[in-house]
Amino acid sequence: MTAAPPRRRPGPLLAPGAGGAVPSFLTIAALSLAASLIVVASLAAGRGALDLRDRLVGSATVVVRAAGLESPDAAAARAAERLGVVDGVARAWPLEPAGVDGLIARLVDGSSSGGGAPRLVAVEFKAGAAPRSATLLRALKADGLDAGLDDHRPWTSPIGRAAALSSLAAATLLAAIVALLAAMAAFTTGRRLAAQAGLVDLLRLSGAADGFIGGLFAAETARGAAWASAAGAAAAALAVAAWRLAGGAVEPIGGGVLAFNWTDLAWVAPWPFIAAAAGALAARLAVRAALEDAP
Amino acid sequence: MSMTAAAPDRESVSSAEAALACQAPVVRFDGVSLPGQDEVFSPRRLSFALAAGSFHLLTGAAGCGKTSLLNLICVADRPAAGRVQLFGRDTASLSRREIRLMRQRIGLVFAEDRLLEHLPVFDNAALVPRILGRKRGDYAPQVAQVLTWMGLGKRMDALPGALSAGERRRLAIARAVAGGPEILLADEPTGGLDGESGLRVLRSLAELNGAGTTVLMASRNEELAAASGAPVLHLHEGRLTVIEGFDPAPRP
Image 1 (spheres, rainbow over the protein chains, first blue to last red):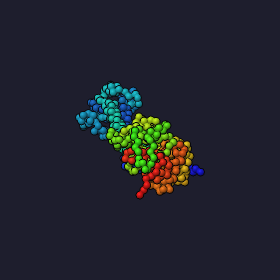
Image 2 (cartoon, one colour; image 1 turned 180 degrees about the horizontal axis):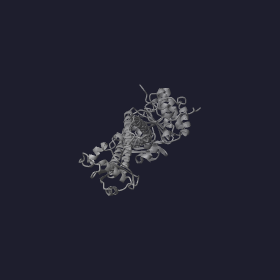
Image 3 (cartoon, rainbow over the protein chains, first blue to last red; image 1 turned 90 degrees about the vertical axis):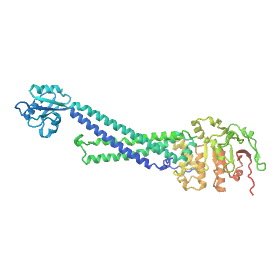
Image 4 (cartoon, rainbow over the protein chains, first blue to last red; image 1 turned 180 degrees about the vertical axis):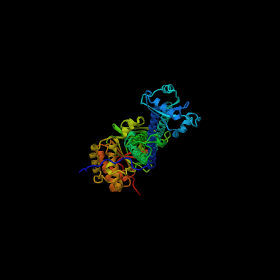
């Protein structure tokens, strides 16, 4: 009488642990950690740049010089009042001299000091309706004010370029990490192939296609890479979360540090899948190359 | 084509022509030099044919080329000279895909078992059906049947490390036949076994042959060859002799 076959699922054809893959998977975990941090940092930096650009596009600073007997403060107040009624200006207000001395010195080329020092007036525009610089200056001149305009909008181009460059650098780094990850997977597969040469020979002599053998190694490498990468990504997410909870900058440009959002953490999630895909592809190619010349 | 006569006091020799006259042979060697032999000057060319459904033993001393000959049949190697035909096709003209398909029609029992030590008996025996992409539900009953036939029905969950030498050899045979091959090539399947276990393996192969599978079994065990009653291909110093009714040499 024939015995009943066991009900359990078939075991893996490749012997687990053969070929010493642990160091490779640790490296993949480290690479995924770095990649996840790069992604999150790049997102935060991009968001900071956009916020800064929006602020610059929506504001200007006016330098007002008092003339005649009028005091600098009075001239600044008058300028703010006049600018406040220009079309497209949301509000305008004189800045306290004490807080902006350094800025004034730069804007007037270091020639301001003493009682005749110019004053600054901040102008905030309505969204999407910012008046032209000439319109503001005309309005001030019509009121007999000696003023110059520091229009922030020209600054947005370099900021945009810097942000784009930063994104490009991050993308390049990520591409390099994916390439390294694939190279590591191919190296690991090569070692595993050598360690299991007898099994590979058995499979081939039993009629297995190279693709079948490649599939075995690809599946195993993908699984290992996915777990390793998940560990690396999780470590990155924890680090970002800890930074955020410990009071890491909330304002994008506040304090000159990156401001992470909780939603940024979602972007580390694809890394295990990317690592698995890169690992599987690299493993398949490595097996194909290794078996190409086999009889 | 050359068939050389063996010692006249040991066996009766069939003619090469008779062997090659097999109708639709599944394996045919025409003037084949084994790998490593001088392909130009060696006079030792092998010619023989195996008819479908036949049972042959391949005998000879260790290192005489039995395994090399089996390797040529399963296209694991190329002949130094001559032509090897498998299922009517010259193996030299086969593409990689065709070689793979040919191998799927051959069952192999390796001299050194080559069992997958991390997998239980059932999974070892089910290797070929898995390779062929068959569904577990389709192959499981057949594999269980083969294991039961080989006396391993109660050891399906055991790891190979827990098996005796005889059980390991029988598992290797079960693995080779679980895919339903047309030819079974068995390299020393009784190697390392006692007489009783060896005979049991031999009987299993004979039963398999009775079911229609062509069997070529390599062995150094001349007593076993004689006991089988099957025609013997005897390899000696690169020459092949086809012997009907093999009688082992008398021992001092």
